[in-house]
Structures are given as C-alpha cells and as structure tokens.
Picture 1 (tube, rainbow, N blue to C red):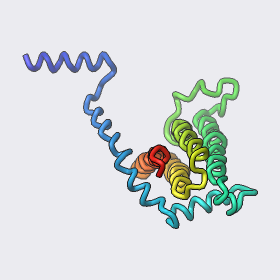
Picture 2: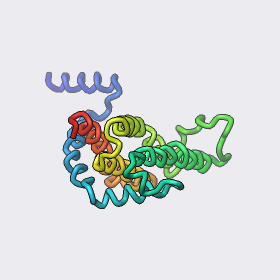
Picture 3: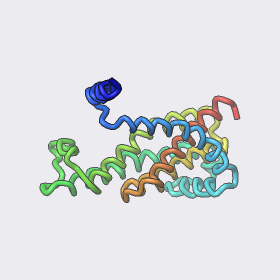
Picture 4: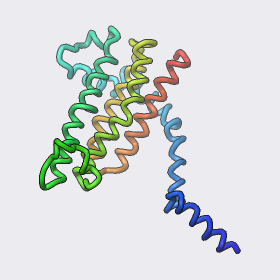
Length: 205
C-alpha cells in the first residue's frame, strides 16, 4: 500500500514536471538573502575597502570626479557603469558567444533562433548576460529610491557600489569561468545589498 502511494506520488510529480523532488531543498537558500544583510552592512561602512573601490569605480567614468561622490551624483555614475556593462558590453559578448557556438557564425537575420543549441563557453557568455539583465531591475529600483530619498548617504551609495562590484567583478567573471561558489556568493550578497538599501530607506536609517 505504501509503495503504491509512493509510485502514485512520483507519477503525479512527474506529470507536473518534477523529476527530482529533492530539488525543493534549494528553497532553503531564501533566508540567506536576509542573513547576509548584516554582512553587507559591515562591509560597506564608511571608510571601508568597499567605499574606496566604489569611489575608484565611479571615477572610471570620463568627466566624473570626486565632487560627484559628495554632491549626490554617485548613484547616477554607478548606474551608468552598470547599464553599459549589463546591456552594452555583456550584450556584445553574448552575441560573440552565439557566433562562436555555430560553425556558420552569428545569424543576424534570426539572432535568437539558435540559442537553445549553445553549450559550454558560448552558453555561459549568453547566460551571464541574461543573469545581469535579470538582476538589473532590482538595482534600478533601489538606485532610483536612493537617489530620491538619500542621494548623499555614504552607506547607501556603498551598498549600491557593493552590488555593482559583486555583480560585475565577481559574479560575471565567475559565470564565464564556470566557478560556482564565488558566483553564488556574489549573487546572494549583491541581492542582499539591494534589500539592505531599500530596508534602510524605509526605516529612515
């Protein structure tokens, strides 16, 4: 009787596309986004290494200097960098991956027709691009709220900088090189930083 119920449960699961029920365990990662909030707060304190890296990243933009950081223009600067890499640079790299994945090269007449046949590095180039795009709306929301409510709050800027650094300098390269642990940790902590920003703004901290 018990075996019949197990078989029935497996059949129902399979009919719903569930081939490995133990995969549900990954839902347990959800609390990590909250657990990492204090970590991101600690790492992004004033005069931290993250602050120095964020300021250095901002100054990469031509025409943007130290005055932008203290005058409320740091968030637009970070946004410009993130926009360029998410939609410009990684998009071009993704297209190159598609070209590399086909003997015929890139099909500009049907640019997405062959994406499901990609594998290896070409697939990772495309997947890394889409991973950035999936996360960009969260950054855009947090950045917009921060620019309106607290454009000169040093820790809020540092948290947004942490997100950009984690995504562009850790998550993206780790995705391309297929190194799972740094990729996962960067994603979790970068997302936690955005939650932290919105939480701080809501609390008035």
